[in-house]
Amino acid sequence: MLRCFTILALFAGMTVGAAALAAEPTTAQLTIKNRMFTVQELTLPANTKVKLVVENQDSIPAEFESYDLSREVVVPGHSSIVVYLGPLPPGKYNFFNDFNHAAQGWVVVAKPSQAKTGE
Amino acid sequence: MLATAIIVFREVLEAALVIAIVLGASRGVAGRGRWVLGGIILGALGAALVALFADAIAQAFTGNGQSLLNAVILLLAVLMLGWHNVWMSSHGRKLASDIKQVGAAVQAGKQTLAALLVVCFTAVLREGSEVVLFLWAIAASGGQEYGMIIGGFAGLAVGVAVGALLYRSLLFIPIRHFFKVTGWLLLLLTAGLAAQAAGFLNQAGLLPTLGSSLWNTSQILSQQSLLGELLHILVGYIARPSGIELLFYGVTLVTIFTLMRLVRWHVNRPRTAVAAARGQTETQVSG
Image 1 (cartoon, rainbow over the protein chains, first blue to last red):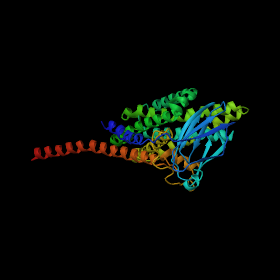
Image 2 (cartoon, rainbow over the protein chains, first blue to last red):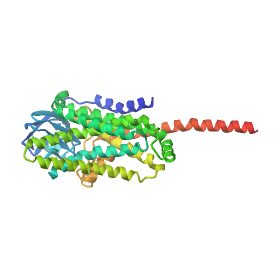
Image 3 (cartoon, chains in turn cyan, orange):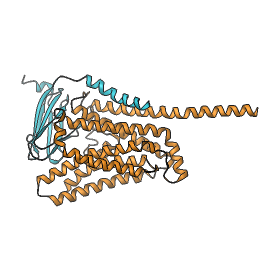
Image 4 (cartoon, each protein chain N blue to C red):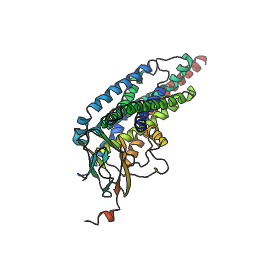
């Protein structure tokens, strides 16, 4: 019975969280080509949940990883995966291709006032 | 070659440290070697399968398949470790005294060996599949087969050596305190794995972030440093944690700890009651 409690307690938090799901967020795109990112800086809006599509145009797998964002996902060759980011406060967040550490990049989140100047 | 060795080392390290702690926690239990080895072999086979079907897994659940798979594997490990720890909280003392008296492997403690097999399986499965995919990526990018093979084996060897070092160090702890220490190590490890699972569910968009980067200690202790990496694996250190990761860490820690205390109290109470009753009877007889 105690085991059931453990299971219940662990999943209670999950269900509460799942209920709080937001609407479909802003989409951003990141491309991997020749084991590198095609852009080094990815500018994202502040305090907004972003759906990031990572596309790997190579035939070999890559891994989108970030300690700053707690993100880690393998991107097989010739395919795209989805990673949700944020809502992020303004700042810089490093990411890299774990299968080729020469490939480094930054998510740049500008202060809301600057980010909204275009609107 | 060195880059290959370092990346393989980082992946192997996580599995090796988990296995080292599991070996510590199952110290003195008969047949544990077979169970742990079984977990490692099954994990390696599973890793090859996951790597083979990486494409299909990545495409599943609208591009979130891999995050979900990782989260499920991690939560499975969390449940198994939690069960083991709760079980040990009531049997650890007896196990320690049995090991001291018999001096050889004891039968007690076999109940949770299956759980520990699952834990080793999940550790090797997760890290192993990444190693396979990474080595494949290196091999396919061409021109450095020997460097890759040497680097891969060097990374594997050093990772296993660090795991062995941790296990050897654990054995220096006196048997009286041993299971208390491994219990705490497992508890923190489990909370860290739960936080990782929360990260995967969050990156799949299934859980809210509850605040990104609540604080940033990467200037003090970077997760890319060896110490940062070690602490990340062992106690779940995250330099820039999100709210959901903290919540999962805290809830797991408190839940398992509370269950451990409850079970210990539950086990100890009847014994004291019986002892008290016996004492009473003896007094009556003698009176």
